[in-house]
Image (cartoon, rainbow, N blue to C red; front, side, top):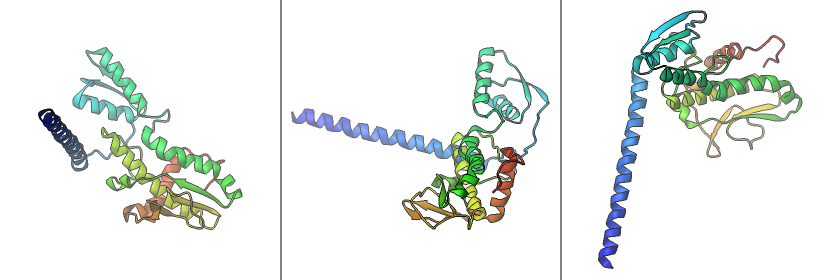
Amino acid sequence: MMVFGIEITLWLVLGVILSLIVAAVVFFFILLQLFIYMTTGVCKSTRKMNGKTVIITGCTSGIGKETARDLAHRGARLIMACRNVQAANKLKETFRKKTTEDGLEMTMATNQYGPFLLTHLLIDLLKRSKPSRVVVVASELYRLASLNLDNLNPVTTFPAYLYYVSKYANIVFSLELARRLEGTGVTVNCLHPELEGVTGKYFLDCREYGLSSGVQDPAKGKKFWELSETIVKLQPTDPKI
């Protein structure tokens, strides 16, 4: 029985060691991918290609695939000259799933531009219902990103980074919204819905938490707001904040 017990213990130890090794390898590759993305050159051009037709070969993998992805995002009509029609059709569907009907990147459209537009459409009701509040669910992961005002509809092969950018945008939006609604009876905070008489703050673990200097820049917030109005296509008849 003692030998049997020793064998079980050894297997448990080996299992734990193997699990730690696998976890370390996965974590290393995640960090490596993030490092490569953050340190390699990125095209910052925001030029659209609506109305233009591009014929691209070898676009079901590698550089051709990423080139096709970027061109599709910019509004170009793509003709994919590929030997494998099935792979090309599959790729076409993935392009469609990553953007909305308006051509917006799906993560930013869901996490930022949708709430931005909804807040505008509800603002008159919120003011009439004062005291009322807008609560934005943010994330500490915003510290891993930045907001490029020259490209507010970003394309990337690293989906997690798009989430980080959307959370950064959420905080910039909430701070600017708080400034615009000051004195109206509508408070705006990130994460913490159980506050009264406090607005324009970010909370973590039920306490006020400091923000990075970049995300608090009022000029950035104002510019982001104005650009977002254009992105969501606010109409002259829509409520203004």
